[in-house]
Structure formats: C-alpha cells, structure tokens
Amino acid sequence: MTTANKITILRILLIPFFVVEVLYYVKSGNEAHRLAAILCFAVAAILDGVDGYIARHYNQWSELGTILDPLADKLLLVSGVVLLSFDHGARLGQFPFWLTGTIIGRDLLILIGMAVIHLTVGKVKVRPRLLGKCATVLQMICILWILLKWDDGLGDPAQGKYWIVVWTVMAAVCTGFSGLLYVWDGVRQLSASPSSVASEPPGKR
Image (cartoon, rainbow, N blue to C red):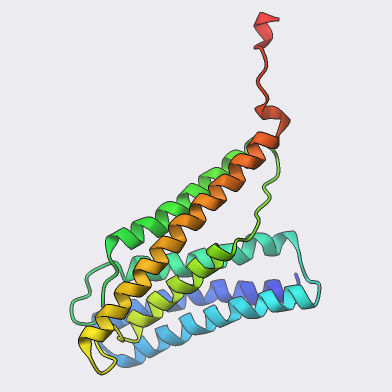
C-alpha cells in the first residue's frame, strides 16, 4: 500500500460525498451543498495528478495502482456525468444524452474488451493514450462548468451556453476516438496471442 495508492483510495472515498452533496443541492437549493460538491470534485481531480506524480517520481508503481487509478477516474467522471444528465430544472444545467452515451459506451466497451483479453491472453496490457488523458480533462471541465453554473453566466448567457457546447463536443470527440485507439490496442494484443492462431478442431485431426 504505497502513498500513491492511499491517495487514490482517498479519491474513491470522496466520490460518495460528491454525489450526496449534488443530490442535496438539487433537493434543497442550499448553495452550501453545491460548494461542497464542487470542493469534493475539485480535490478528487487535483489528487489525480498528485498520485500520478508521486508514483512516477518516487518509483511507487504497483499492480494495485494500475487498477485503482483508472477506476477512481471512471467512478468520479461517470458519477458526475450521470448526475448532470438528469433535468434538475433551474438548479443545474444538463448534459446532452449523446455525451453521456458516448462516455458510458466507451467505458463499457473497454471493460468488455479487457475481460475478453484477460480470459484469452491471461494479462491485459493497457497503454495510456494522450487522447484518453485529454478526454478525461475535458470531461472534468464539462462537469465543473455546470457545477459552477458558468453555462448560465460569464457575463453573457449566450457566451456561457456557447462554451459548454464547445467543451461537450470536444469531450465527446476525444472520448470516442480514444475508445477506438484502445480497441485497436486490444485487437493487437489478441492477434499476438497464440490462442488466436487458427487450428483444426481436435476431432478432425
């Protein structure tokens, strides 16, 4: 249990608090709950960079970390995206369903692909992609943009709406293309496995 992994676990523990605070704000309209939700999300997002820095610079790489770190990212982002996909009236803005479908669809596709590779090859090798990191950052920006209510303001409501459209489109594009890259990596791993080589069934030999 390295320091980096302890920070990652703290990120995971912050997610239920984030979800609860958003729900309390939507129900009551108390701004303290919205600010608490923003704080939880921002701290979890910042700690994402902190644990990565510690793991790289202090040689704290571990098998557990390779599982927990992306899991913490996915749980935080999917929780935020799903919460903000519902209509909360005048309380908060709403994500378009096509963005929610793109994000969840990509993650499900990757999860199924990892399960297939694990059962076929025995070990999954995940190579981080720059486009995937860009998608993560853009998704975080979209969530914070709505939580901060910048989609309604920035001095000009039209400007706020314009930028949330820009962020959501960029997030969807990066998410979709990064998913295709991960699928390509998975196909290459399956192709390189001896179990993928064609052979005659045992009964025909």
